[in-house]
Length: 485
Image 1 (cartoon, rainbow, N blue to C red):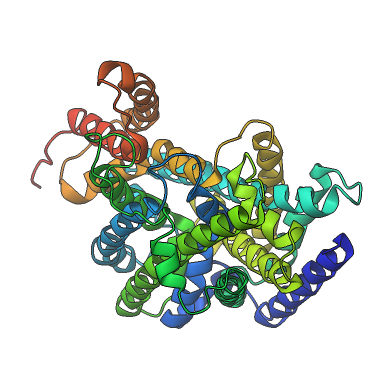
Image 2: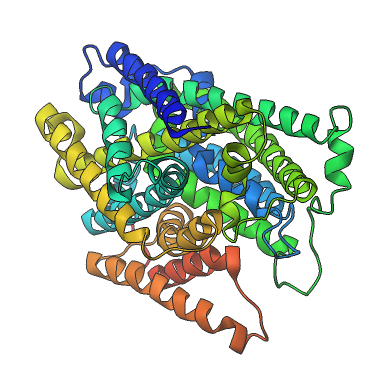
């Protein structure tokens, strides 16, 4: 597939998104931008959240990770996904009732009500840090693919590729915000799932597996899910499962991006239906992505295709550069763009929301002009972060993101659950900031030296638990019992 064909597909795709933005942005105000006037149907939110949660990382990195050289990878990621399910239950029945009861626009306003302005600011800061870097990693992965397979041939610099990507997102989100995104994410999730299904069907047909896909995957040598070997090292089930619970709580339940969609539902019951239906579908979709990975490795072996050193590039290599039918390339592009931009557009909107509500003023006092200015600043910051990360990151994107979550979401989990599970009070707000800054630093030292001190043990996905516990214990130490009125 030539660069001109790829550019045509991308152009038509974004014209469709901009058209949706035009209709959904009519008469939009701040309430529309931030919460879609609290009138979004739960099933629309749930379906769109699938694409926003998966992103381009899932679309590329999960299939590539199946055979990434580590024999414990295979389908071991599903152990973490099963942990996500428990995390989503906690989100739906512990966190979301609090958000709805307090009628929050930004979930970090809870910290202001519970502990004061310092806790509010540090919580919002960690969200901004987490979401900017997380969204940048997701977009960087897609930009790398487009650069390698399209724009290098056209002589377009990488910096321009990233700039155009962010400009396109800004174009269809700056007016309607979350209301627009609920509809564009629904369309993009549909494209992503159709792409996934049809790609599996075509690859299976190329392998003459049309009637035996499940058995072929199970016999492939890549399909092992549960790992209990080597104590608690590697991808042991307990470590991956517990890590999945806390990662889901942090990256979904304490993330303004994901919760902003839930808060756009009419009431808590509909939001809970949204969360649990989303969780069930997400488990199945992740399993299908791993199955696709097994098929891609089988196909590359059959065709003598060299697996790229960066396994994230396996799927695009087969889709765009192999002898596969052109339809696979088209499906891959549609799925990749849909997965990538359904995550990035909501990230940009939630970043704008958090800065406006958490750092500037109450939502009712933020003017439309200020909101639009913040939206532009967040777009610029996203661009700069992507360019910086492009020169420093070289691991599989999915594990980069999980490692990052261990450092940035841990203090949020400790802070929120200290507020929820205890009735203790902290008088000096600066101590909250100090503990939330020290916790990731101490976690880094624990992670860096764990192999030497603990006989080769590596925390991996459970690093987020260590971080959260350090934050929780530190807050307990500087707190005291509430004095009855």
